[in-house]
Image: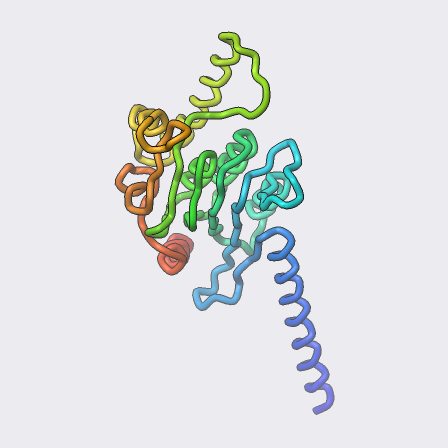
Length: 235
């Protein structure tokens, strides 16, 4: 009897420690592995929030997603025997092009089922990350801002600079068009639209509009996204 009580307390302490570690991981990295679901599938939850931080550190007051945290985690997910699928939640203003493309390429190359869900917004390079998964959702009020590549700071006004910008642009449009059903000409047209944004060129797509343009697969929320991912794992 006493031994049973000791075992029960030990299991309880173990569960508390596991929950504590999960809470710390959510607070520190915005990531958690969902392993208590009724479908008995281990799903890793990955969040892309704020600004995607590249090689330069942003200010301490800015919400950021650090690619040096995301890339090793994606490699660990690929190598894990326990994790069976990945859910990506996005609410990002975009950010560093190289870092965003690196995250998108890693997600696209995972052998495990992946689903993305755009909440709030997935702007700029966030569009690339949103389409990199096997299936994508956007909530009805979610937005996606599509615009040309921009660069902060001083640039040298010579033809080589603009050629470099064009190369970056082609890398982005090539990746997006390869991972969703929008055509290159239509995507570039949306990027260069002049009648939508007051101080810039580009297009804002809201909810169903992103689906109609062929960028996102379906309008839905976390319920639909989870159901889809469980189905992909089971299938």
